[in-house]
Image 1: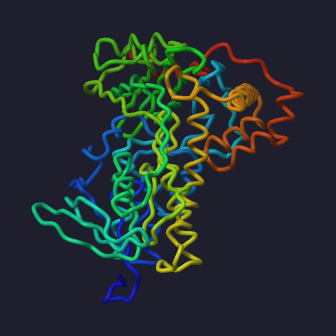
Image 2 (image 1 turned 90 degrees about the vertical axis):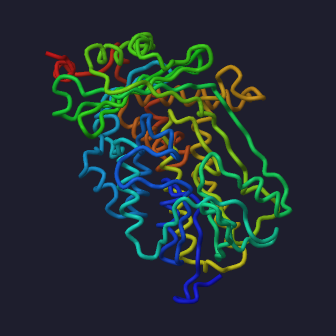
Image 3 (image 1 turned 180 degrees about the horizontal axis):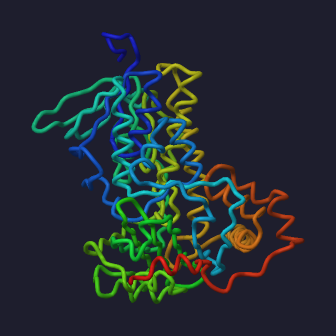
Length: 466
């Protein structure tokens, strides 16, 4: 219901992780926001129970960086001021593609990705968003159910400690992540079960933090990435992510039958056994700063809320609560920001209390979700046992075309720009069929493929421990 004191509409956002914070930032132009968080949030860049994936390598593609800056001005600069980096992709990256070709380190594209620990990113984002007086944070508050009926959601039933109460609002946004209970909540209101799909490549992740070896902490050492090949089972990969505090976040991955373990003595050997041993070689003399953290919660899982025949006013789902992706593609944070940005843009022309608004918000939020989903599933669906149905003929042809696009981008800066436009979620997949890609793909000229990782002698020397 409208806030009596201000006359402004009111909104409730469930979840104060990145998606919830972005949603709250998007709403403040138009409503007073109550942000519900079941955990107690840390004051600084510290781990918390609600974001277990924070232990692993994270980056924000340039499409996400743009959305971050638009939604929360100053947040990217804030992360950089505290040790994060805006890295040039591919100039500041040594990367082997899934089809086992090494990208040249072209510097002619505009793409800059944000790199830091997830703990730092979340801390800076919290500080910027929660400084807005139009947002009220309620911690240790668990959303139990939606209040209303199949036609309209009017609030949320909340448990705080031993007390249960009802909070009313004009708009409720569920940004509670992969564990969202929205499907059951909607059924409880009398709506049909939402269609869901899962594509699970069976990927396991293992991450260990290292002290940056040699003199690499004193320079902008490149990201080093060896991507898994879906054409080979098991698929194994890894990444070195230099972050603040003179540290490397090293995440290794493997699909069914080739998973990394939590055994610290096996970590470097696993890295040496990847399709290229460069990550293991860089780690041989590096000092580990803790144990190995593992996870298997990596399935691509999507809920098609936008396709429901009926949708209640006053309720919208955002972020991982709509879809979660294999983290190797690095799109979760970008989708969260772009979805919230789409919500804000609609609210600039439509009142929070307008009939049909929530359905419209759900549909615009699905667009970045669909883009990230297609990128992830287009790779993961080819792993054995990933899905109940094998890839279709069309999907196989598209995957073959993407392989050609990647091979072309690895050798041609014009094609690489088109490829990164899509991978960074700045432009739709149709960009791969533009002249920037097709002319180099069909006619060249193309430089030869690299035979080894494009690390410079200075970079290798900086990583060597005296």
